[in-house]
Image 1 (tube, helix red, strand yellow):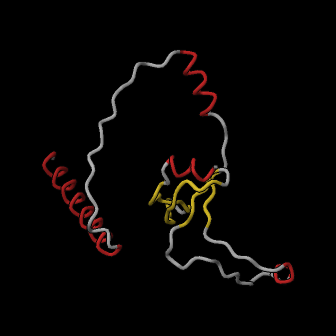
Image 2 (tube, one colour):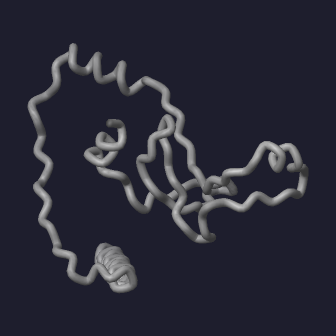
Image 3 (tube, one colour):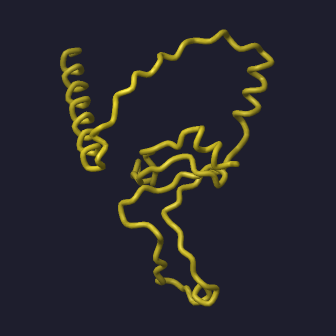
Length: 136
């Protein structure tokens, strides 16, 4: 049984590697270097006071939204919109959606359907450094 699972995982790894190679070839990123990441290490356990502060921050509600695209129109055209009207957006079909938290771009993703509900699969997460630069 374990051997079948190992075979399945190997097939998935192969497929994912092929997909990544195809994407890299399509985008011209063939010269990319593989980077070794450091293993995460367990830090000293946090104190009760630090845990309380962290819990307070983790309970702050935020608004997450996905943006398909934008369009600029005049008020005259806005007032003429009715059922069945079509508004052209600034994105092409198939382009990634923006994932915003409290209006700040944090990632890009693609629409998926899970149990008859829409969801988003994150394809690119904006680094913390880039997010901080945008705040300034």
